[in-house]
Length: 130
Image (cartoon, rainbow, N blue to C red; front, top):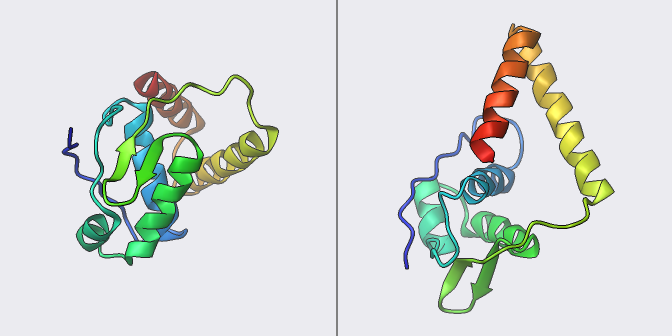
């Protein structure tokens, strides 16, 4: 089964391109828009679509494979795996996510968003992911 999705990243935003790809794909995986068995485009094809080096996409795919989201096979490419939710939260991974969330909230406040709007958006986003 091949997946048809359009991945869009904004390279003008801070951070490495592989992180933008990784985060965007993870969002599609968590929300179920990408399902087990779906094939992702090859790193070369996706890199051409996004305008980045193929190693950038390969790094994002590799990290998603380490997280258990993808299986990577020579010649058949990246396939969405059936993944169990981890039973135990990694303290290091959780601390990293919390730090990124703090930076994002600070950025939202810096552009003038009210705390109540940030909370509402956070709640909506959590509901979308569940």
